[in-house]
Image (cartoon, rainbow, N blue to C red; front, side, top):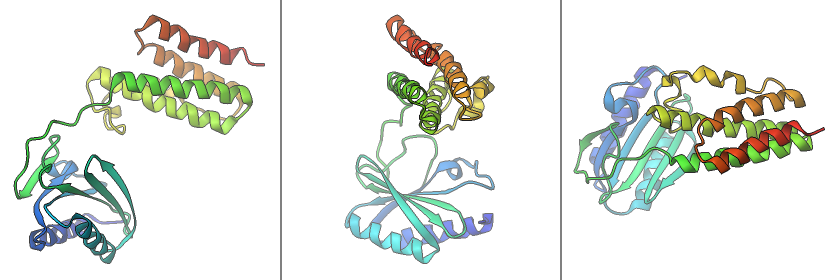
Length: 241
């Protein structure tokens, strides 16, 4: 398990590496450290502004991370920005974002510039309400069919996916962060979801959790025809022999 002092030392090492790399023209702390909200479990989040030889920069910084104790990494992209996420031997997560210099800048409050120049960027938005509703009913469709087919573990998976999107809808409605569950503990009544947890793979339990979750989803849908269609999913599941 990593210590806070290990995390601080690695952050200093990365900042020093950025300052001496001529291809890196800017750097910023992101995440909780940018707003002084780190705790014992916080990851290390770092953003680099790269003005040339981007592929070589990524390769060199990846080699640096493995030399510092990384054991694996995965990539995520948002437009032209590469987010390379490293798992360290100490279990610390280190996120390094490689930004083209003409796109480098803050998209939210958790951005603290260390050096370089930034661009004016639109703030990152919340998820789209209609998209969340669409994914929720899509998971509901497959939860219903999985229960009917006796595919118990697939049903658990689909119910869990449905819950994720309904919870995000609650976050949108209450104005808290709806991304990756960040605002769930700030909801006024998150415990309302307790009854949607699947406690066993018994068909009756799967149906109970599915119907409880469907009731919460219906509370987020204002369109009459869609409400009736989603309600029909719950009724159809209950009618299965």
